[in-house]
Image (cartoon, rainbow, N blue to C red; front, side, top):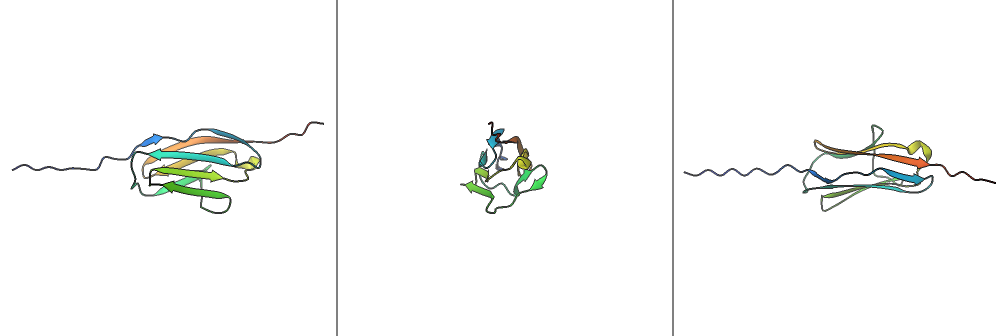
Length: 104
């Protein structure tokens, strides 16, 4: 008698978040790629606060593998650590929003 037990390989992060610098009023986009779809409990965070899809924060996913966060019209106070969590997987990156200084 031969018993074959096949378990699904756990997903891993193929491409993690990258530090991003933008100017005030611009958009900042973060992308995280997983090895395969089906990971539950996907969540984006900014400095420990959960982010939700709305007109300023765009959260999308493509084929369950590529997860994207776009923060629109950023301000200096948006600078901080962006974190992507999918199950037990975590990737983080820094967001730096630079002010525009007018020199006369």
